[in-house]
Length: 352
Image (cartoon, rainbow, N blue to C red; front, top):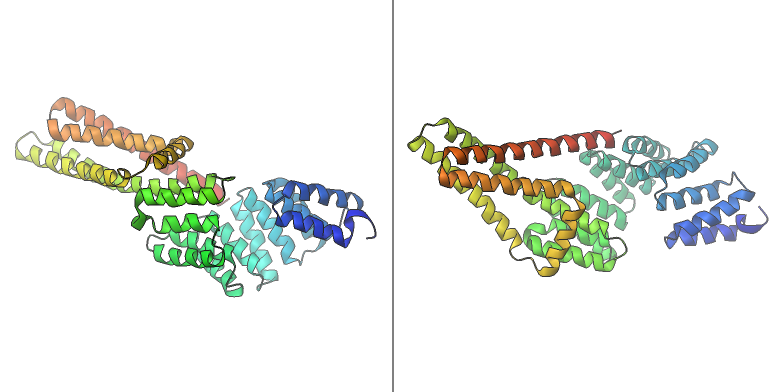
């Protein structure tokens, strides 16, 4: 190659743009070079990376397939193909390409990392953790690997301590890594409380105000955790409500009402403790998250209706209040089932 952008200096310019995150400019420069040398492996590789950086998964996959066809024994080419599938959330195909990359070069840490991402996308967290640890074995001070491992540990109900350790190690290497700041906030959310968690997530947003979505998504994870705890109280109180409405009065009717009142009252107290300390700025942040997730907003409203109608029956104990409570429990049950089915469909899609 003797002229223009296809020279060695041109590779460096495209690489510099990729390093700066200026993916559209990198794409334009790479395409300019490919107009002269359409099969240049390095330029095709840089083009694929620039397209992945812009979320253009289909175009990136096309470029990556050309690379694989040119050099089928290249782990790099297969890894780029896997990353292009990740950009389209085609996690099953991403896993297949990543496994091929690992098989071709078992000591390439980024291939193991890409495999971990593909497995994570399919909710196969145990295998994903294994792949992430293998990446860290090869490159123990790579921040991205530590952050991924931290988020994988967060999926484990008993993994918050390991998650904290991974995020703290990442922040020692890169103190302003916003993904690690968000992850650490979630890992420490029980100690921080809801207001403290929101405060840390807002801090992560101040570090990178150009991309607020991950901070909002992180708070949504915490809010769903709070709501899930309320679901158990809903189920237990419904069982007691059912026992109560079967009774015909007397003590057999009073005891279930008392238990339902205590259970739902406990839920209200727990929710109150979570939300009462939130600052005005925290409430604004919270309102944005709720507007962004109608599914959560519907579930939260459904829970509030269920609790209110259940408490009404527990206090009044009348036939009319029982009808109202029936409606409250049934609408909550339908929302829970609908949410569960939506999650099941989404999980199956992720697994390809």
